[in-house]
Image 1 (tube, rainbow, N blue to C red):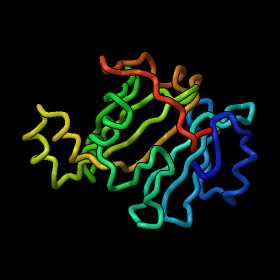
Image 2 (image 1 turned 30 degrees about the vertical axis):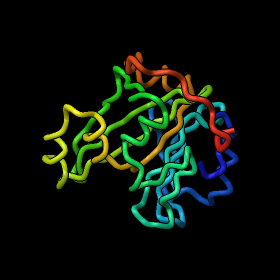
Image 3 (image 1 turned 90 degrees about the vertical axis):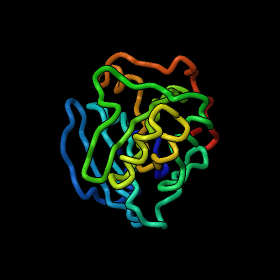
Length: 183
């Protein structure tokens, strides 16, 4: 994600230019950039200046639609596609909301352990499609076809343990093989 990896020194973000926003999230320094492709990119780092969390939010422009992970495309790849490619519905966490309503629609978070990193896919069912999607909620594949990829985050195991709580896994869940683009 933007050439950065979990565990890199925060100095590696210099390639992104100056951050457009800085703050704190719990024990982490947080920075955010508005990228040229329209996407928003966030990085949280530890007191030791190590990157613990990365998030890329799609800006809804074609220039930023390639996620760079698993061949997924923002706005096109569905939650059903993600489940199929990664072999399960992934996992959620006791201290992290897995589904939330926003003005834009319903956002679903599905997480997978990939090597030593937790990757989370944020899929959105647009508000205007939610009632139609609810009609097929008992069919995970049909329901998941309404949810389109909108953001991706990567987090260190330590970050996850400190902030998200115990795992709630799909019975079919298994750890995902690290793709070449994450090595």
